[in-house]
Image (cartoon, rainbow, N blue to C red):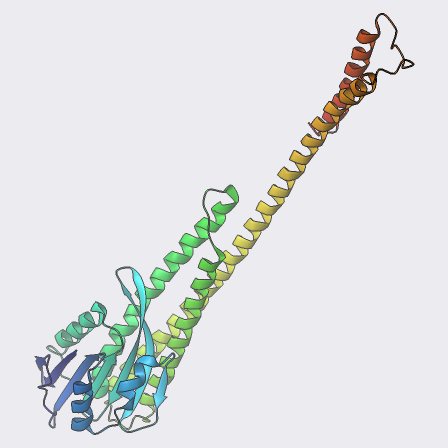
Length: 326
């Protein structure tokens, strides 16, 4: 899928087919692609004379990187929030003197909204350079990062609430949920840091594309915003570490409580067993019909033996109660 906009003074001409025109002096062209087709790649590389390999392979990139070719091309991995779910995509940027091409590896409504916002902004402001267009895109994208970080913070709070209630056994939380949040934050931090490096390279002139002074200053603001988001991600990683500590403490407390409960159960079972064993042993001995047992031939022998059994059992019961086994 392709969408393009040509900026002429404060006018914006839009299109969604391969009918764009090469910009003339004073004009700037912005092309946005989503998983470009072979036909689109062929036309773009033919019109703007650059190597098609980045457009063919950027979807497979696992991290942000810069291509050392002309025109200046770089890939950043970026996150977005759609339907309350965090998604990740690769964005390929190709910068030329009057043209900016951006290609996304995944379709998303978020970038459709970004393109519309860019179109509206240039209806009131004249495009000064390709850097000006790049700034507007990155500014919209970096603002989206705050939504992503906000969603992650809410997830951290939810997991933290579960971790604090786990000792009461009201809910369950898996350690995988906590570690998954930490991995996402590490991934975001790497993405933000890689993007700041690319912006720095553009500002010092490595892109070899003319950027007006105001756009260079604005790109500096975007750079500072990314640094702020790196700090936020670091703070959230600390929150996740704290949650993991709370979770570990809760699990340790549960293990201790379970051990105490098991110990209490064993004590009670031992007590009940001992209490039942005493009369059972005495009854078993007298049930052997041995003539010379004490009170075996006594006329009140039965009652005496029952009394002895009751007395010994009572002493054992009192002892167990005294020692808090029952």
